Length: 367
Image (cartoon, rainbow, N blue to C red; front, side, top):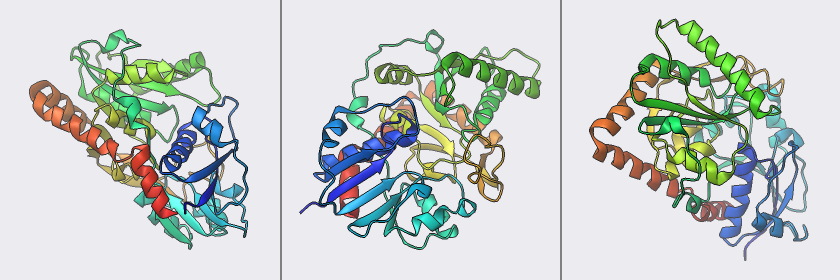
């Protein structure tokens, strides 16, 4: 008999964290688990799938397992059922946050990648820790229509990044590598679909433009720079996928990633991924890891005060290696299309392993 699962999470927030929770709920449901969602939120704007809305109507009674997918500091224990902590971190340790004390109150921990198992153990988590990967609805990516057109992406090789304009995402490394490696006359472009929490699209673009000018001024390369194609703010899902479908490689230079839903989406669309080695992306990405080194966290001042402090470390990409890998994938696409197609097919095949159905089976087994 399937266990009845109460799933508490930020699945209405529309953030990467929120989307991961929503997909987990849908994955459990697809596997036949009797899941009862209950939402908490940190955002003003909220989204919800019709399937989850229907599941919310069920009474939270006769619960066997409670999955608490939120900040560890919000965990609570109930002896009436099994309590599971599901959380994400991006550094080698989080002991300074004291999150381990809250996690250890529960019966079991779930984390989305193997790097986090080590980080949790180093941070003092002493309950059982199990690997529970995130997922997407891969069927959404099978027949993407061209509903949105970005003129700059026509007849060029296009790198793509989707995510927040934040310190942790290390967009400065991506911009530096792009400007260093590719001359403005080469048919290469960079698409950045970015947002900044609490900031409107126009303000986000203004902040990026200033940030970008500082990067270019610091490089002092002595020639003009190709302007990235920048899209800020909210895009309807079909339009976002349409824009991403016009790209050829996804690049994520984050200092730390517990997962990366946009990278998995890019793989489902057939894009190989260039990603920071030594992060959670090692577990699922198909493409090219970028060499990195462990450095103290620095500059993440827009987060919780006791998270991403310099007492913990994350991974900084080697910009020269990033340049080499970006050039490599571009030349493969230009000179040996068959080899690029193999990379594209491999990315799509790997993404299938993280469908709602496949991940639902894994989560059900963990229960």
